[in-house]
Image 1 (cartoon, rainbow, N blue to C red):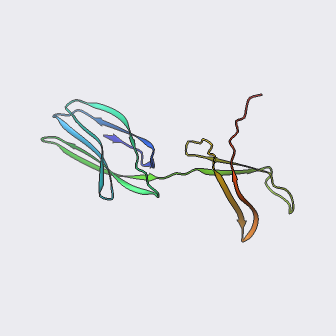
Image 2: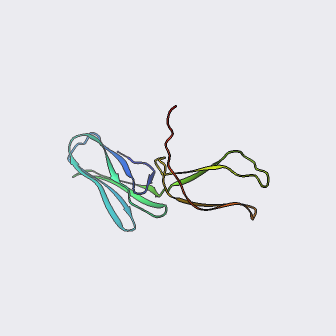
Length: 156
């Protein structure tokens, strides 16, 4: 039995758990991740004893969503079991959030806002941001590139 997430973040350390239950003979468990004709072996374990083990592996780097095949093969002299599942490898990038000081502005009013960019671990990212806000082809606001600044808030 093997447990793996259905969606894995590209380039991340992913976790895989494998269990071999009540073997009657010496078995070889091979776990592979396959895509585009390439086969990456994640685990190759020979045992005649029960085991349960979790381990980390490096998910492949991809530029867009890719479906990979996850294959588990357990083989012995008199036993063969093969199972294949699909796993989505998904790249995630930083996300930028903009907060304004009020929900609606009248024409000519100054807009005050905060911008924060967070990575996939919800840590602030220091990067250049460019934005344009447009509703029904009417430009409401535009900002040239500006550098986000990371500041810590202290307790008072």
